[in-house]
Image 1 (cartoon, helix red, strand yellow):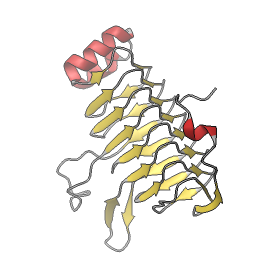
Image 2 (image 1 turned 120 degrees about the vertical axis):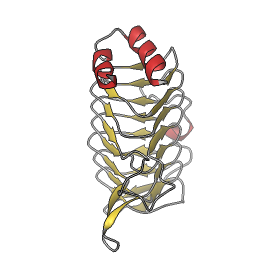
Image 3 (image 1 turned 120 degrees about the horizontal axis):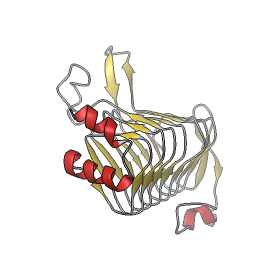
Length: 221
């Protein structure tokens, strides 16, 4: 019955669809926020003021999707994970949190793959730009021969170039850029750097005076 309600709700006018999502699924969706023609059904959804999710995006099998004020997810993204429930998979990781959290004014553009088996956080005013980047928070642990996952964190005022790969247990610090086609596979802490390459390394110091790092609105004209 719930699956049928999910499907039918896609074709309703937004004001009715929002009402159904709130009443039957317990989602928290601000009146100023909107979801396009998209299959967005995490266990818990929080959309703060002026947030939006574009057409043909899929979000399923995660415990929480939270868009803070003015955050956005574009078209054709695939956001999935493995729910925190009793299972042989990830049974050794009791603290695992399958969630995606976008900070204020942050944006995921179009046609990306985001695996939220473990927590994925994107800080405020950050842009997951371009196309076809992948966030992969889980893989096979070859030593233990079992599925394992680890969180991924992107800081505030970051820019992720097109066609990048970010692996579990990696992080990009505040005020940083990940160059196009780069592989981020470790935790970095030094701010104001361009990280690039396979694997990504700090290749260029960036000026704190760059206007991108001090903008007050997430969207860039």
